[in-house]
Image: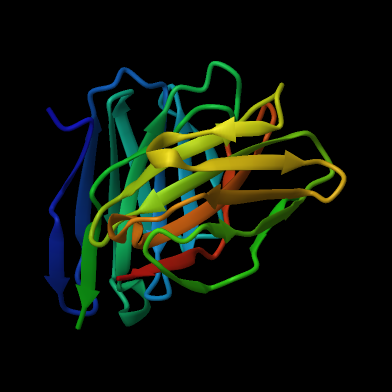
Length: 115
Length: 113
């Protein structure tokens, strides 16, 4: 039973295409995140949802649109893909009873390559 | 705003030797501190975290870290490393009451036989 799962694991696509990444957690957590990890392993938060409400939206191009249909799911849709979007995208979840103290559980990552 | 600095991008060490991975943070408010490990082609997993109380925190796989408020540091140590400890290690900070975690740039620990 995978705690945080992401699909697809690999995504190879052409510039200009639109793609989606799905994330599901079965831990009963109330907070979910999307991170982008670049080729130098730098990890940057993109979005955070708490109880389906968007609470963190970093300076991410509006081509990126997250959607949380329920507390267990957080999807990421990317329009008009660019070469610079190539990266590994991680979904994570945590239980934030005391904001900020929760352990984050990460998915296995989605490796996106834009050609 | 918070920030995290991991002072070493790479740390090579021989098997069974001790290791210390350094982390400094800055914040104007109270923080929680974390160390995560990332094995090749995997997501991150928690090694340990400091929330409050004792400044020496013990984690999984024999790792420990010490919170030093005056030096704003949270260095990670292990007395004897194994080949299997080869991985990327991330220090992270979040502000109390917030939902945003800032990660350091990572330190690649490479354990040699």
